[in-house]
Length: 328
Image (cartoon, rainbow, N blue to C red; front, side):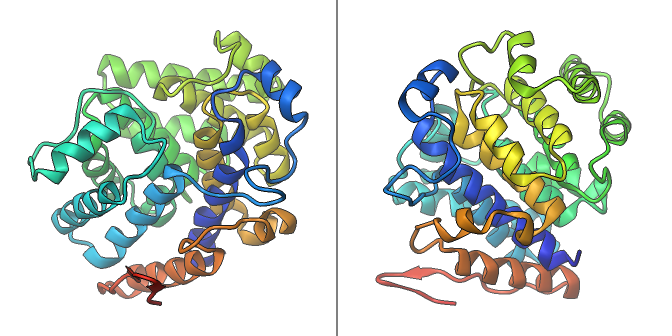
């Protein structure tokens, strides 16, 4: 696939997963089945789906990348600016750690991150992996900047690195290769070793053919996947490796596990979309995504411009919403 196709698949795949998982967020698997049955269509509005902060984080990461043109310090400043702009829009459903970091950023506190191992950085990781994964040292550096902006617990960084590598061209959907890449670019810290152990556990479970619901139960996540990054990462990776060529099957399987479903499905959708491209995303799901101004068309334009920026090494101005229009 071309870089544009990879980025387009990542953004739209994440948005579709997010929209499918959002209506059943925080429900246990049993409660989800009782209220909704098997999730196979958009449910937020009648036959329509809407995105949450998970997709918005991917979008403002893409804009910061596009406008920074390989300047990592500028990327950090732009990402912080995107976070402030997003906070001023009063986003609903925001995680507590990201909320605290966003408030600190609004007051231009230089070290806005808070000590947390929540999922915020993992929301941004698939896009970074899809965009920068062919050069792992650069990817690792940008992930450090992205993670520290909101979360300072080392677990948040290592979990994000695992997700980004899964979405990158380096691993090609191969679990053993993912483990090797992670081991090569991690260190001997307790957090990195714990994450490596979780990755190995996920890879082994997928290799054995264990379904993701049973893997969650083995992890003690009977009532759903929590917002703790070391719960989310192994479940997403295990489900990805089980369904690496099946976008619909993977998204349906991870949503059925319950818990933080919009986030788990958004992260998985970003990884699968980067691997498989837009055409692998079911047409009915793409057509049912109802969101303005972050429409499927706007994501396509953003992906195309980001790919051009990365290929040509030049900064481009990202489209901005100027009420009541979005400029392309």
